[in-house]
Length: 299
Image 1 (cartoon, rainbow, N blue to C red):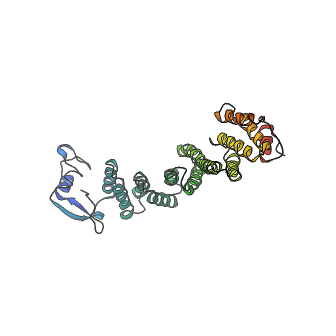
Image 2: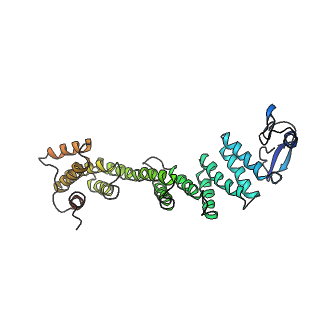
Image 3: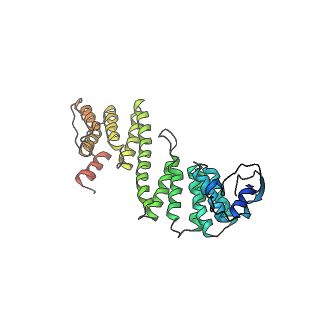
């Protein structure tokens, strides 16, 4: 049987008695039959010897990898899948082992190794039916590392690009449908980062810097859930700067698109306190958005 990998070389510890049971006429198959026999029984018994992993079939090593995966030993499972690829390269089972290696490493949260295995699969087997899943795993290796909005968003940009690859290369797959949902969440994540920085500046009365951040959300992330608050914060910032045309226009856009939200109610109240109301005013960047989005005037 295939046992724990030895520390040196590519040998594995095996149980002689179990090997005899597997090769005998008692049946039971790879995982053994009744009486607790089979490939994995007595794994840590006393009667052990070292045997090169090359002496086992690809199917046996693959089965051991699956067993470790079922037991929750994802890192060890990935190593056994890697051995299938190494010992039996360019075979169908090696191809299966490679995609399973990527999956096992991802389950173990070893995203770099998962990404490397998935990329090798895409490079070696671009036309295979599992290439879509490998590309999806590549995207997940970035997406599942996205942290809270207070951290650097470099991984979010990488996740967006990788998710876009899944959507564009495999549009009619279940992976594309999942990638679309994750793309929207990652996109919202970037907008949330801009909002966090904008609120930071606003709280410290750096109004010009704050409006720049909120403007990015309105112009580049207008389909995200952050847009209503961004428009409200623009009302706050522009009123503080004395730019009433911009504040009123932000209120008009907010009212047209998000009238039922608390952000609009609060924004309307802010304007009303100064004797103003939501309306398109002046010839500023918000007025241009108002004309395009609400009036349909693109020229």
